[in-house]
Structures are given as C-alpha cells and as structure tokens.
Length: 331
Image (cartoon, rainbow, N blue to C red):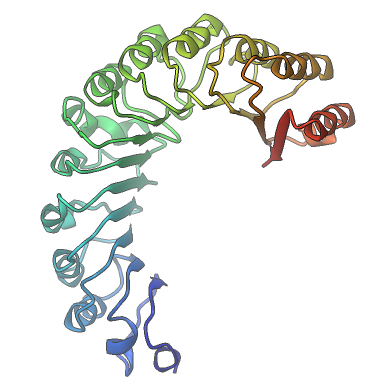
C-alpha cells in the first residue's frame, strides 16, 4: 500500500528485509539515497537491480554480516555514486571492494566507521582519486593499521579530512599531510593526545589554506596554537577541548584574541568552564580588533556545570550579542 501511494521515492533508510511486492518497480526506480544493512537477504538487492535502481548518489551500509552477491551486484550497477558510508559492526566491507573499483572516478565523499576491534581494510581508498572528503570514525588505534598504505597516496581534490575520534599514528599523519595538506580547507584531528610538536609544525608547513581546524592542544602548547594562527592565515574557525590536560580556557581566549587571523570568525569550545572576568576580557579585546568581524561563539556542553547555568557569563554574552560583537550558540 505504501509503495503504491508514492510514485517516486528518493530516499530510503531500511535495515530490515522488504519482501518482493507490487509497486516497487515504480516507487524505487528513481531512488537516490539508500541506507541498509548487509544482512538484508540478497533477493531484495537483486530486486532493486532488476527494476533499474541504478542511480543511487548516496549509499550507506551497516555490515552486520558479509556482503551478499545481490548487494555486490547492486553496487556494481550504479551509474553515478558520489557518497559512500560504510559501518563495520560484526563484519567489514572487504567483500564489496571489487564492486567499488568501478566508482573510483565518481566517488567524492567517503565515510568509514567502525565498532569492531580489528584491522580494517583501508588500502582500497587509494584508488578513489577524486575524493573531496574523507572521514574515519574509529575509536580503536588498531583500526588504523592499514592506514600505513595510504600515508603516501595523493588525493588531488581532497578538501576535508576528518578524524572525529582517534587518529592514525603521528608519523603516518605527517606524511599524509605533506602530500595532501595544500588543498585542505578543513581538518579535524579528533581526540588523539600526544602527537607532539612535529605534527603541529606539519600543519603549519603543509596546510596553509586551512579554514577550519579541530585539534587537541595539550596544556603546554600555547606557543603551538600561536604558531598555527601565524602560519594558517586563512583560518576562520577552530575548535578546542578544555580541561586539566588541555589548554586552559583563559590561555585559549587570550591567544585567540591576540593572534588569530583577520578573517577568523568562529570559536568552538568543548567541555568549557569560563570565568566571567576571562570571558569579558576576551570580548573587550575582540571588540577592539581592527577587523571588526563579529564572532560566532559555540559552547559544546558536557557537564551540568556548563556555561548555561552561570548567570554572570550569560549576562555578559547577552550584552555583547546586543552590541553585535558576537553570536552565541550552545550545544
């Protein structure tokens, strides 16, 4: 009934089995986005292939078992696949790698995710030369073991590199940035601690066109932050983690106010505890900057004693919002 009511469905997220039914040939023929599980029986994917569902632009697969022949065939038959998201649950994506080779020229966005404790196959990424965005959502360092095969691969169109959690080994990252850093506009180094000053120097040397940066700075790396501001003159946004082992909030604010580039306009703070006097001093300094560019201040909350329950801080923020000095967002 549902399929017969909808003449042309564009996006489908379905992780259970859909049996063969009347109306599918019309409803799913023009499907452009599909999110599914590898455990859906092969017959479902065969049915999609048979009704000429060959124009998927975005495909997301949760691997809870090995890929079936029907899923491999569906992937192979696509004509213009752009966006690929693969999640390793109790299995991984090794079975579909041969089918992906056909799409090496069309894929522009890749997201690999994992909840497993295993070495994951990553070397196939080297064939996807037109990638503009790469994201690796891995919690476990072991997942990155195969990244050593990617550290010297050139991705000439890469603009976004995202490691929201863990990162590859520092030496792998430095080699990768040396080859691919020039065109990067956005870099997220996640929550990996202990990469050292050598990686900071690599960012400064090889990533001169960065506009957005998210990176851990240890509590003794205020000079490194200043150097990044000096070296990355196009930087517009930066995200910090705050806490005992990371840069102190007051140091962050002073460094941002004094050394951030003229086009800088967004400051994101995670797990922050701001003192009112530090916040107001920062906003006064920002108000007096020659560029007169308003600042988007984003507070990403973690604990109950967040900025929202500090009435004094909120009074200061509201005052400077009304003056047009900042925009404020709490997440």
